[in-house]
Amino acid sequence: MILVANVAVGLVAALHAYFLVLEMFLWTKPVGRRVFGLTPERAEATRSLAANQGLYNGFLAAGLVWGIAAGAAGDPPKVFFLSCVIVAGIFGALTASRRILWVQAVPGAVALALVCAAAR
Image (cartoon, one colour):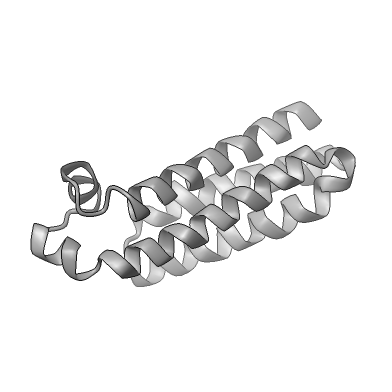
């Protein structure tokens, strides 16, 4: 069960690393604009905001990787960072796009449930 939980946490970390790349490096590029439905002008105007958001996603990914690397001692960091992922996903769904709930919060909640189940 621990392996399954860690794989789920790793997938959530990979998602957030992908978000970092999209928001920090691809925001104004065709792929970034397509993913977020942005015009070139809007993408350029929001570039620094997106980069900041991407950096935060990188911190979430790093915290999750830290939790996995710490072995049994990594459960508290995994629970903390997955909780942050879930809260950010719910907030994003309420304020930006409902899709964020499914792309961010739900995978985080599934991984958190698996981490908690494996700890028992």
